[in-house]
Image (cartoon, rainbow, N blue to C red; front, top):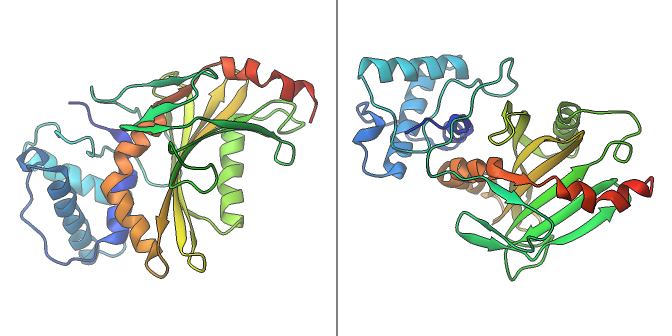
Length: 288
């Protein structure tokens, strides 16, 4: 089974959220009965190695882990959570994403009032042209819920040339501004990296972020993919709402450890059809 490269960000969350000091003897991924057992032992291993050398970089940690794989002659992982050699944070190279046979691309068109996402239904969608942000937004809340306050929501956002900005921009330009703007707004950028889009193979930018509002009793995990569609740019954003107060950051980390890899895989597989651009012509022609 192919390795799933995006899982490095799960490794990041595990490193952040688990505090246990006990470590099980190293076992190859194929020796585990469940993915949860595997993730728990992986978390323990990361904690112990990090305690041994607090200055250990993420790249060095990955090298150590791969050395263990080679030492024990491990077979390819049966879990979609397996990581490969992708640097944390900003990358200087573009890794290859390999999706296993359980993955499937979801092509979304304007006629798709609802969409299936990891066994759940989202929609019907609500679309609008935001005159303030100059973005075409299409929101798919969890079925039966309301956009903006839903427990889970998928958004397609279209950034059109000549509308979102007067000067020509690339998906990379927008991704960098997205990260900078999120940080300025007080959101926490947990990790971000570049990898080929699984469908088009164009450069895509994956961002994992969170926002907490303890005074209101909730917070969000955001999983985003930003890439090009024709000469324009779009983003897919999955928002997961979590309830809590002082423990929100712990809840966010726990959710990401347990669910992050398959959800980010699914976000990466969402591919808006080019017909959305025709659907947005009226917005572009208005010269907003």
